[in-house]
Length: 328
Image (cartoon, rainbow, N blue to C red; front, top):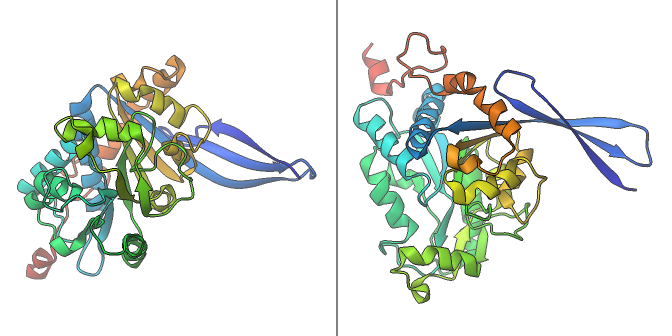
């Protein structure tokens, strides 16, 4: 019995591109509606705007959630060049008192195997130097895979358990490689993969050599990484894509079909995915696609309105600490 998948794209609400999937079995005349998937594509001018937009989006998500001692917001985080600007802006929000990470738990995507935690190129060092040490997050709530664990498989299994015990990830943020891989789920990775030990592809090792004095021999050849399915479990996914080098990957991820050779394409089937991209990253997209989504920017920008703006939606309110509430 063969399975044919038919896609019916339509716009259900302004600013939202919806894919309605129906499964049609050749041996049956019955057509069954399965799920409705919402995929947003937000196009900004450049990396600076991308970073600011992403930071405001994360800020508003946390504020709307209104976390507290018995209600933590759970955030999935990436490393690399794409999120750096976003992290700097989130630090600014914290310094200005607009945002707190006191009741936020984080889970990072990956870490190298065998690289000392205090090595300048470890993802532990990256996160603490660029983000964690500048905000008010409790160290115990910042979770990063341990690439030096005695039992790497057990470390990966425990990471999955910790995510589940935290109640799952509310918002998972990711960047992609030039070939469309997310985390270290490189071309050929299973779209059903979970957190695991991963041997790195030669292209990835060569690309990362720039962080190791351009000496390939210094680049780790293995890593621990969340799986595609791990990220797919999140309530919402935000993908940051910047630069012309990633333009082809963006096209595969949004305009072509889902394919394990471009693992980020799996998020076409996530219930709530938002691709945040800059102008350079759209170079391989159809003109019609770009014009359509650019025409929706007034709608998309409502997602990042300042919570203090009197015209902002009621859901975007500034977070108040438990201590403030008690003094009233």
